[in-house]
Amino acid sequence: MSLGENRFLEEYEPGDYPSVALAVDLVVFAVVGSTLHVALVRRGEHPFEGDLALPGGFVGTEEDALGAAWRELEEETGLDLGAHRAHVEQLATFSSPKRDPRMRVVSVAHLALLATDGRTLPELNPGSDAASAHWYPVHAVLADEELAFDHRDILTTALERLAGRIEYTLTAAKLLPEEFALYQLRHVYEAVWNTAKLDAGNFTRKMTGALTDTGRKVTRSKGAPASVFTVKDEYLSPPMTRPTTGPER
Amino acid sequence: MSLGENRFLEEYEPGDYPSVALAVDLVVFAVVGSTLHVALVRRGEHPFEGDLALPGGFVGTEEDALGAAWRELEEETGLDLGAHRAHVEQLATFSSPKRDPRMRVVSVAHLALLATDGRTLPELNPGSDAASAHWYPVHAVLADEELAFDHRDILTTALERLAGRIEYTLTAAKLLPEEFALYQLRHVYEAVWNTAKLDAGNFTRKMTGALTDTGRKVTRSKGAPASVFTVKDEYLSPPMTRPTTGPER
DNA sequence: GAAATAGTGTCTCTGAGACAGTATCAG
DNA sequence: CTGATACTGTCTCAGAGACACTATTTC
Figure (tube, rainbow over the protein chains, first blue to last red):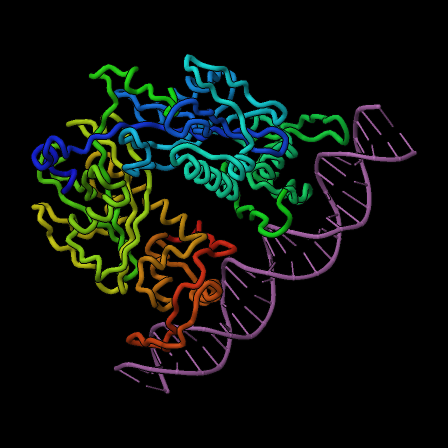
């Protein structure tokens, strides 16, 4: 049957009519140090009581999924989006009929990247809801924790998407302020790829071609001052290859 | 509001309840010669009467979106999926409230790749439906034709996905029989990238590392016989870079 | 033989990776 | 001063791209 025709009113019996609840789930990432964190909610109710779950909510009648994702990002995390740079994009849609045992809920998962200075995570204020989100280290959660519903699939998909995306784009900079030093960007790559073997010198050479040097410098607690850059090109060409071998942290 | 809680039964008023019709749209690609084709339906009814549209249909109550996409692929195109290799994957979800002027329809778009020998397109048998699909050259359609609903966005997204994907995977081989010669694979790349400047020798060297030589040969009408290969590795490393400059056909 | 095609050889150039070397900061 | 860090220099090696060349087919 084609959407091109107006058949759905004729062909479907009332009980068979394919109507679903449409939700969004959010995978909210932020980096501190060289560790990638994700915002999760500890469930207090059946089903999956005690497990960790992604924040999310329903799509309203007057908004699309991306709009709902932005709204829920603010509502669920209590974030002041005026104060934090954020990037939201669609990830994938999860539509297994039994993914929520209570009723049919189709969820459009979204990937949200929050900018941090790499030293403190954005404060997650409990919104109007009781269950508030907290930050958890992503790789540890995937190794140790039970996740509600199909949220492990969603989180894995999000992590793979991000890990792949930063190979050929500067999406990693979405996790940093508009102006940043190269060691901050390097820490983001190390956090997402869960590796520590990125050579600082080669990283600098590779990245500077796609960045603009502001001319200013910042100094960490020790060592020489680092230049401050902004993103010039959204794409890296040729791509950066993820280290395959070597010790994972 | 979190999916972690059972709020949706309490918080939503009946009229406000976020219930949508869930559909799939299909972008079905196949290659003949060095031209990428897509299966489209010419609309005979309002709205968008006379425009081209993607085939699609609704998701049933007992299936997920991918299952619906496979079912609709068979129903809408009348294809005998036992006789054609096919690959279907989720593309993206389109959820703008006004994308269908008649009612709210959220569509999970899927990318479907049909295997051909590169000489003839799979026959599209009119199914039970009146409006049957036909093959159209993709790049010409995008240049010249009006597309119904947001189907231009969907088709563009599909083409970009495929064009990017074949840079670092052997997804292009999904558009060919299980065994194929390198000139066939090269034609697929040229079709998707809409280019003619792929050097045959370098292409051979690049690809053979990820392929298995069956030892057999095939001969075209002219020239030396070509070896027959199968896919060994799903991933190309390092990736193949798409030619940016140069004359497009 | 002529034309077309498959596949290899070869050369150049870009860029990744390893790692040394230099400059600049804090204490 | 020492230690830490930022960045550049340098060398090697893999691989992309251009293109010549050979081998094998049809006509």
